Length: 241
Image (cartoon, rainbow, N blue to C red; front, top):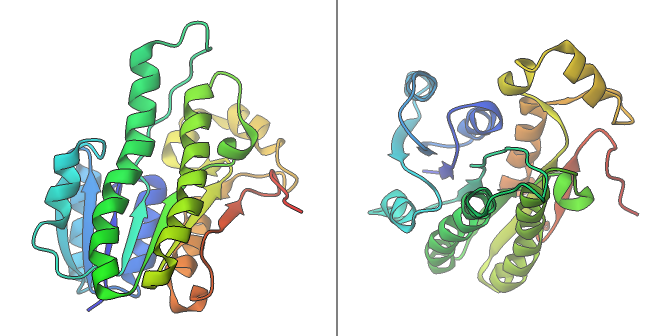
């Protein structure tokens, strides 16, 4: 039985990742902040496809949420740290609460779930952790200092953890999406989408399914020699060389 856990699973990239991993998984553990019609629909879909599903509700930045997710779990093959939030504020007006929440959800959440996964995966001698970063963690963005810092931290965390766990047979990688056409972005309207698309050499936004395909690759045996990497699914917005 192949088991995977995805945080922030109900919508957008998280949902697409769950559906992609379900093609190679037997047991899905889904985390989201609270119950919702979207989460219920996802569970129904997975169960109809024959994938055993467990739901763990709660804030990823709370230690008890991670403990609950791993309670009684005997094996985990893949962890995807996807849960996140986004809000804009210039640094001169950003509140401590805004900064603190952004860091907690992205960095504390990734740490808490990765720590639990590492304990289990090192015992079993295998596993893959995929952290969802962002091109803004590489480029930075005005009015998103807190988000950029959190995503940049996830990239550094990924590389450090990959070095620490490699000897135990555990791979750790990150995916850094560029602008992605999720339902939340679609609600911002065609003008916003057109302006955002123009920022990328490919002149369009990505899709959640394109991000999910990269996550699924990193989680698979095809990426068995890949660790400590940041794969940019960003339409050319960041070009490393």
